[in-house]
Length: 173
View (cartoon, rainbow, N blue to C red):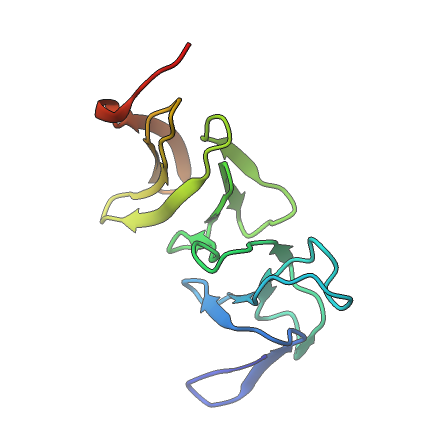
């Protein structure tokens, strides 16, 4: 994968990532995220990350990403950044992971699911005064559907509220 500046058409960097199918950029274009179809082979052993985050100013030829993870499906693969790139979030099975200041070596995990329910949809919405991350979890025979909302004001995050779809609740004891 080769990235170029649209202003002067100069090469920014080349990423050692064959078979890339999808790409997205962070809001300030400091990072690019690549996605390839998950597969297990001799070249890609089990649990080899297929989503990788690359820093665009790490040199002209990059062999290793700054962070990678496995996302088997094509939906909800891309991480979400705040406009100032102070906070990055991604849906990961039963939790939402938050990274601060593009430090992907440690994350704050918000365990929002109950009994193995996976995240159906996670999105970052912005208004003039604050941002929200919303994560929707499907219901099942034991639990209601749930929507979790994290509210961001400037650089602080407060978790927030949990809403249930009560008309479909069938609690078992």
